[in-house]
Length: 329
Image (tube, rainbow, N blue to C red; front, side, top):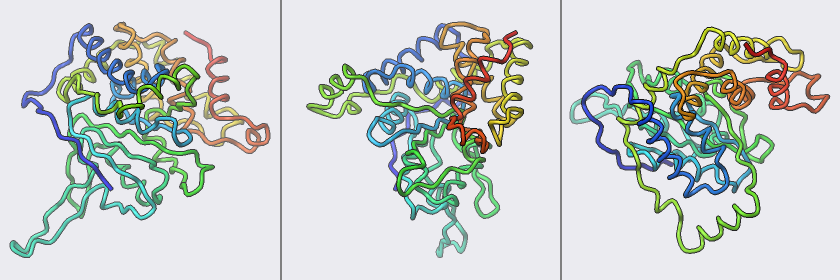
């Protein structure tokens, strides 16, 4: 099942990096728009914006009913661009995601009909309720931003971002995401339950109407692309880059992890740190930016060893310990 949001106009000229102050202002407007819907979750909103600026994909995992889909929708609706929503179910087919070639009897040729992945922002709701075969249909799109069907390659629109939600694997009717799929998500975040004041505020907001109805776009796809290009220009020193590599390497040497983080995670961690720096109004990355994001960027890519399972350790706590014990340059 897919739904579509009307696209905004995108200029024909290639986007250029935006000035730092302008970038901060636009991102602040997006955060304010999302905050009007998601009460009491400023950290989740901030991490969502980091993923957006870093040109990455976002995985939101938590129990049902805490606002995963609403967070994803509020981010998508704050940008005037194409947005497709895919409700992942056990009977969803890969062609429903990527598209199919249909034979046209009038012309005796095959015509490609794009799937739901052809949008600037793709919301994959409950992604781990689909079969592994359907989940894997997103692999090429997420990494190479293109889709290959019947030997033909079709580029995806730019910017391109996948925001996926999933329930914990302990929930009934779920399929664990393959390691290759998880590794393509820049970060995984958890919402958790709101505090008492935020939950009371939520009751007020939902009393008369859906707060998503009031969300209006505060920027467009072209401006968003400029913000992403600005993020690339944030300076990272050699010392910070070595710190990133040291953290990632530490996940591969600890006996508590059967599978450490991949080299792709080093790239993602540095990209995310640059986005965090931009949100803070800086044009350079600090080691604290890397430390603040390490758990969200690295934990979901790892597999626990038998020893860690016996000690009832979590990937989150293990990564946090590695961050605490890795020397800072």
